[in-house]
Image 1 (tube, helix red, strand yellow):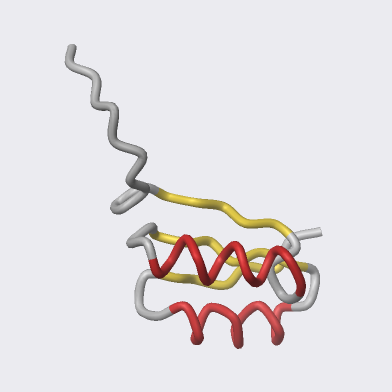
Image 2 (cartoon, one colour):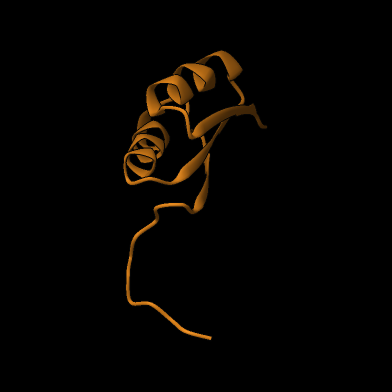
Length: 65
């Protein structure tokens, strides 16, 4: 097994809770811009879908309470 010192999140999966607004939204957008596959989760599905659309093709929205 080899280990890398890289801190890249490209290709990783990130599950962001409370991602429809505020810090969660900012985190989702940052992770997506760094190449991660992002699960945008929030109780407000419409807002989650809007954030996922802003994040690009590697983001999906989910309703999560």
